[in-house]
Figure 1 (cartoon, rainbow, N blue to C red):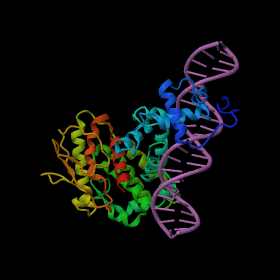
Figure 2: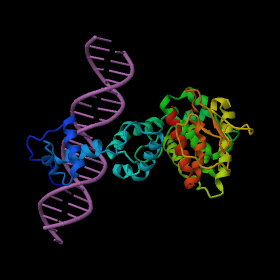
Figure 3: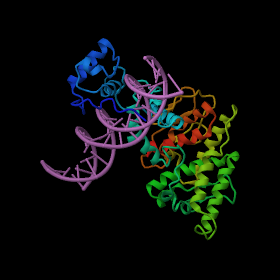
Amino acid sequence: MGRSPCCDGEAGVKKGPWTPEEDKLLVDYIQEKGHGSWRRLPKLAGLNRCGKSCRLRWTNYLRPDIKRGRFTEDEEKLIIHLHSLLGNKWSSIATKLPGRTDNEIKNYWNTHLRKKLLGMGIDPVTHRPRTDLSLLAGLPGLLAAAGNFGGAGSATGAWDMNALRLQADAAKFQLLQGLVRALTTAAVPALAPGMDNLMALLAASNGGQNGAGGVDQSMLLQQCQWDGMNNLPALTNSAPASGMHNISGMFDSFGAGDGLSSTELGCHGGASGSNVTVDAVAPPRPMVANDRDCNNNGGGGVSCEQTPASSPFDGLESLNLMDDLNTDGSWKDLLDQMSWLNSSEL
DNA sequence: AACCGAAGCAACCGCCCACGA
DNA sequence: ATCGTGGGCGGTTGCTTCGGT
């Protein structure tokens, strides 16, 4: 069993917010003599606090190397990435963010990032697409209405995002965006499993409700999401260029199929006329998720502009983030980033 | 201007672990 | 090997601030 709290039995010990005078006593003492034993520190420093309270006040607030102010986009992304790897190991995460405390990161996660991920349709615990059935209810019908494929099994179809926007409420639309984007990577032939699942889903949705057709639509969608995220091939060293090309084409088809102009898509390329162009020889660039200027023309071919706030494709201007494809060869990372862009811009 | 609910954040609580006796 | 202690950690609370009505 755990031991009793360090402050038990210390009657009259002050609790609650620290005063400037108390802060000064603590700082002066530690700067002069170091903290030593936290339990003995309060008496030595002339504080009517328990040692634990002193330690927390010092480590979370008074320490001179603490960084104040808002978290940057890079820090946010790093926190999310580290959380996906480490879970709620706030102290471990904090070691990767100089100047930030575990408590600060934990608070920021709980108040901002967690909600952000939820809004993206991503489970903040598992970092996988949410399978909240209440949110999923009705999605198959919406998907069926928005699907505009060239034929059964076609891998080159497009989605009518305007139709989705009109028919889905905000939360569902947000989830659909991520889902459709994930599944649309099936335009890359190697990703056909994701599309196959989608077609099965659509077929099931045409077949009636759960039971009548023997298929649970929500479960199908769940499976579909899962496959869309996971049945993605790892990239080889030679793959990124072709992968980028395919993705560029994918967003071309997005623009052609959903009635949105390239301007509405938010990105414009160079001579290629592609909505998104990626110069395969451009050096990787640190990711800045909210990089509205999105200028990377120093040696590359990405040039983007801010999109209208109402565009469902807000955020796609940052597709130069596909440079990150090179970092670990994971398509999932790309999809994560796309979802990230959705949320950060909506 | 007043009220109220939501959001943000500092601080606390209690359990766990490492370590030394 | 066992036990006690100190420190660390994650979860939670409650106060303050903000924004909407």
